Image (cartoon, rainbow, N blue to C red; front, side, top):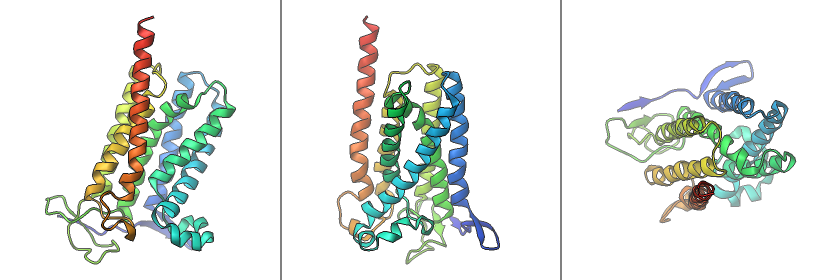
Length: 267
């Protein structure tokens, strides 16, 4: 068993505290920017557009993730205390909310860029989003949050700092499972993109991303502790319910892109 008693804080300088979660969150955008820079150069797109895209992504991710947490997991409280929705520094971000926020942000971005259709952008952005998801789940691990259910497996983690009644009970490191899965997804998507030299049917990588990421998310929820009180007794928790439409969308986009490839091959 692994005794996980790591501080979420790296160091403090006066009133400023640097935390692992914040560092990994920022690193996700920095590394993603480098990958997208390479993609834009390879496909001869305007790099000034990439700067705009980054801001759309940041705003879509943060606003969507925060609203998702507040409205999906504790709506009664936050609707009664709306000003607390703005207090992002207190924690509380939801990946499904981030997904919706990114979709809206990219739609608005693509409306202004005629040479970059929505699906074209999404097929490339999801490569970096998969990597970012891996970084963020590592941040959750350092925060000792989103923990798994008790287990007797040899790699069970004792989350000493977790806010649970029995912090010394070994649990599934669900955050680590997700982080590894998303990292593998990143390598798969990037390899496909490079192997086809960017010439992929629109919606192919986006659909594949939704199927793998939210398919895994649906499964891993079975071994995770519920995030909020109202999930107790539910057949499927909120994370699984929110994953289903995204998986269906992924299947639709993937099959549609494959059908389009076959149709073009017959011409």
